[in-house]
Image (cartoon, rainbow, N blue to C red):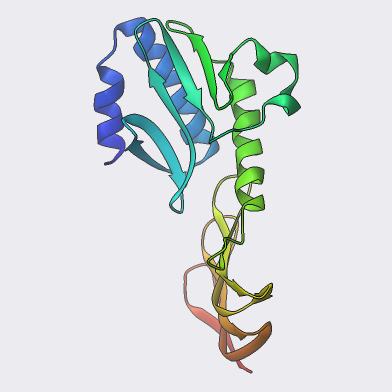
Length: 188
């Protein structure tokens, strides 16, 4: 599923509702330029490096935004309460745009929440910049960096790669130029 599928989904609504949904889409795509638009659970969604940030959908009498399972909206105060439908969903008028400023706050919060969800029990680790671009990825073992790791610049270019064994750098480490060429190689 791709952005073409999202195009098709959004085009399936009447003009005013389509405009409201397109407004959400525009804010999300602008806030997460490296995000991947997909259809997940039958709804337009955006993922960053395979991690779901949020979904949105149009219904007969309203539209909704789904910013993750059980996203705690308490930190957003009264501005979000008038849109809250369930613990993990925000409902807004079918033919009116969701407030862009609030949506941007929700997206930033989701990036923070996603970062805090790592490392996973499997040891998988990812960290994202506020733009949703990947900052670092690797694995952890007993709370120490272990295995292959990569770090990225804010523009998405690879900065450094190497391996750890139980928290200690090992083997070949490479620092890269923005164009992807190796700049410096260090052996540990």
